[in-house]
Length: 255
Image (cartoon, rainbow, N blue to C red; front, side, top):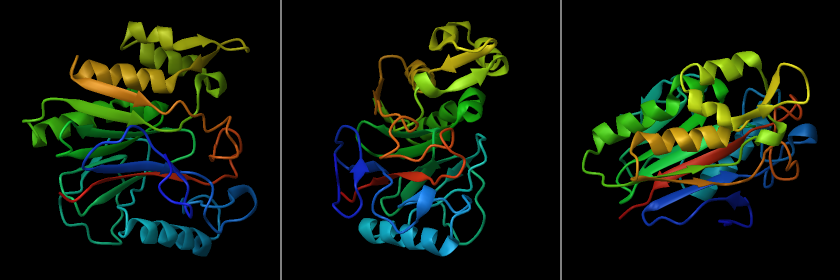
């Protein structure tokens, strides 16, 4: 669904008490390969243009998102605590129960994942590339949420635009890293066109891992959108290292 004519966005099923969406390439001031709403500072773009883009997003939201310095790990920010800018925050996930916190994840092929409970009492976001996904960033995020909100009876998650299996070629080491710990995950890999290569279905792996966390109580929604294929909508590092970053934004609405 679209939330703004100025900043086109993509979201999943509506949830009372929750705002979440992924930005597209449209609505900003960046130029050339990073046209136009590039929100990533470490992309070789003019920092002033990126800051302009971030300000446009903040104006649209009515608040500044909590930006993370993502490092493809599993560390989790407790965004319920006071956050004093500009302290560096090297995290790949964040959770909050506060309704004055806007969480953000930057991606350009990796999985942006939003997790919430059925009553929208707690919210989490995670940046899951193949390394973070394999290392357990989703499990760590949900476990922290379940600890903070033990009364939750059901859970939902949205896996936003990311690279699809058709375009995500990986080596044998990636296949081995997953299958050595979960033999059932072999079904999410198909042989690549080159010897020793595989095509990996990261969204499928993420859904399976999320559903395993609390069987029968976790509903996972897939955007079904591919960052590599849909050049008009999304940035993709696999398509071109000279690219920007879209943001997945999530916030608990006031009640």
